[in-house]
Image 1 (cartoon, rainbow, N blue to C red):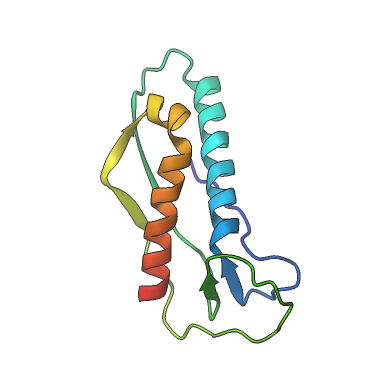
Image 2 (cartoon, rainbow, N blue to C red):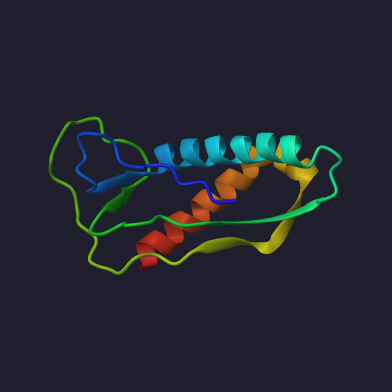
Length: 120
């Protein structure tokens, strides 16, 4: 299953990705994933899961951890290529972890995305 959520706010013009917003979107995606699995696999035949994450169409966008207090249009532009897809290590986690530890899983993905984004 693929979940694609927009990361850019209306005024950013796709130039800044805010880590706090990415975390919120990851949590939404994982909660949605859990709900879908409960519907399509209520007997929990699939006990182990693998998830990957990426920032698509990153372009020249820069990564900031939190939205700046000032409403400036001045921020650095990234000159790298698109970031690679990231996965947890080990990549497998359980359905119970998806339900009970989704926030920690999302924080782990956030750290991996941030590292990959700044590397690319």
